Image (cartoon, rainbow, N blue to C red; front, side, top):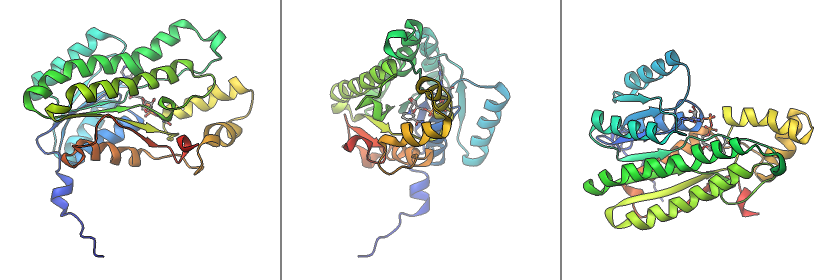
Length: 273
Ligand code: NAD
């Protein structure tokens, strides 16, 4: 069988004229997704924490490389009013948000009995409640235009649990629940909502966890990687930011229009256990 490649222009500019807002896109998976959507022709709104000069350089880089418009919001996603400002700013600048990627996330690792309540609230706020706010604010415009793509970066921890991650596991399970409700409510308006569930991906978030887990379990860093992080991942490899970005890009295209309400694992077989 002969498989014909898509013409370059068609694949590269599949999202021309679209506007994508990606939370937590100054680092890791979110940055990779922003790059992939910009490469496909979407104007992008970046969000996340970080040094001003590095973020300005990132914006300039995306503009120069892909010829798209790039905006940045420094909204703290644990603050509902800041999220409202970010969404309003995006619509004021670009007229709309067609693709919403709820990616920002934080982690805190601790046994349940000593889990600090303030950390519980912080993890729930950024990983779950922020997606509720961005989604409720993006939906009316998507409905008006009869098109929308909402992609929630959940986790294998949205499907199964691990010890010491009470807040994160609860938030990611909640995010998959929010994904399903959003999908059901918006389906007829050609708005899809799906969750991506990565296993371990080598990013700054995981880098920080190695130290936290080493303390929690009382073992060295290399033992954390081998015996704890990748213990559940049958292929024994970290997924890559590029693999995650390719899946997010596909979900944003018209070809993915019938995929909605799904929680798609990219976890090397972890959740097949
Ligand atoms: P990362 O730490 O590299 O990036 C997180 C992003 O979120 C950064 O841009 C950061 O600035 C932003 N952020 C954090 N707190 C914020 C706040 N209060 N307001 C605004 N922005 C904030 O992490 P990552 O590994 O790229 O993770 C991205 C997403 O993928 C997260 O939701 C994470 O839970 C999920 N995930 C990651 C892995 C992995 O192995 N790396 C696995 C499963 C799921």
